[in-house]
Image (tube, rainbow, N blue to C red; front, side, top):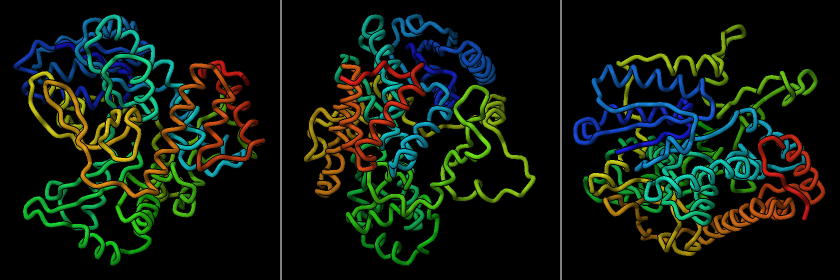
Length: 458
């Protein structure tokens, strides 16, 4: 078996996948395993290789490890490609967040939804297509296992523009299960769920007790009513309101679900903290300027610092992540390696959430739109499980809008058209006005011209 890790400089997904591989007894004893680590930055892939070599040696794992900056070399005859790519993630993400809001957008987060996510998509789509088209040449039967965001938009584009088998993975549904368990005062292994929708905008249509089969939604409703209204406000307040509106509890949380609706701002107290900077004192996004600190939400560790307490920088966090300690090697609980094992050994497993073309799994959504729901994985591949309960009409309508945006972004990329991008922006629930949207597109295309496609008004 050959696994290629593309974007191997990633301190989260790449290291997590390597730890899952080294902990797998089957990948140690039942296959002759080759792992190719690839990143466009040599110092990053070398850093990951050094960490991985030390870890695999300490576990006496016989896998053949090697590193490269050559994409075709890494993918040659691969069975699986695990992909997690970003360039200067927080630098560009801070632009995605602030610039649309400067022009009147009400977007929050700016990663997978809202105008900011559209520039995020257009930046990553070119490299993603390069990976997929290289796979078409050198490993056409391999699975493309994607962690790169915006998940649904990118997976849909690759599924439409290439013949490569691609699946998108995200742990958002599992974050939602953890929230359900907090309300229910149960453990994740005790509850069963059915859920799905769009990546970062899914809903649990069924919750049950695995031991008894009892429907847990009545108990959840009772517990949710009893719970403190301000508890974990930034992460759960919007979710609780959406539960009251739509009748099903959403996942994964405010700053993700809120990217797709127009009313999220009222439920995100920490919104002004995201990539916070002082415009009187700082000129961001110019050479030599700092990238603003990223605040996921206002809960917990972000706001309880003392005046002169040292704040851990991103660089220090990365250095710590790459300091090997065998005692800290643990399963990531991501799905890539379980999926690889199930396909290769022809096991049959259920995975809580994958992103694939719908093909009738969620009623009311187009077959070719990439959706997220449970799946069955075995030697034949990955297939979505049809949901047994329909999502509410308003939820289906919201997802439909995003599906149309997916198509327009693909057209904007292929046609190199600012006009098609404008159509997508104006369709979004967090859209600015027409004049603001045009100015925003022009500024973002100039600001990110080194990494965006060369879009023109056509």
